[in-house]
Length: 156
Length: 156
Figure: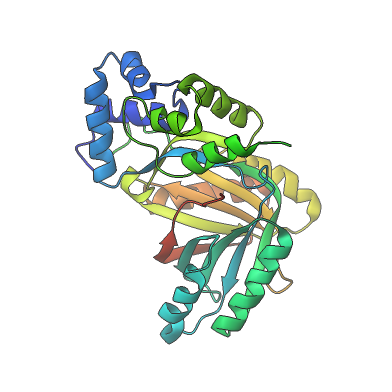
């Protein structure tokens, strides 16, 4: 990632914070940076290929859409990690799952159309995996930010 | 009805990776028998109504130069501390998410913050600052050691 140019960083900042809501967003990004649209698209393509950009699209708000989400954690014996991860990860609505260095070593997020459905899913996951899962839904949200400013001084 | 079936189709399109083309909404517009302008107008409305939190690029933290990504959970000594602490944490650009969660009695650490920084020194610095400002002395850093799953939520 060391060769990420100033132009790439400028493109990334716009793509994250100011994505044009127009019929030709990349042309508008190009215009604001005095570049050619084809060049902008090629640069974005390269940043997707390198893995820096996961995707370009919409980030929905689960709560506004009426969905329920919760952070879950469980204690999984070392030798059962892959097996239990297999059970949990195949569940629709489980979007993130990490091994963390804590007594509760497996942490995953679950989003479901309602609280009832989420509880049902957790119940069956617990049954299928034979483990106990704790659920920690947010009761107060102070911040959800999903963009990162790529400043010029950032040593990438 | 907060959103109609056309909005659903649009959100189904947006929750994925939209085409990296000069006119990314062209095919969708044809399929839905709408103009591209109408699609964009609906996208804007979805954002105004809060269903769409953001439109744009989603990056992979690690590859964006944020080598240290830590979940830090803080222990509240009293409920009155919560709001002030949440607001202080939310003020950090290095903190992407900050929530107060319902936690089981044996867990005890209820304010969760996700911190993304370039190195361990900066992480230690931020934690110390927050601790001083909020008066919260007890916290745990819950680091991830393995990613088992990470994908975007498919709502529709």
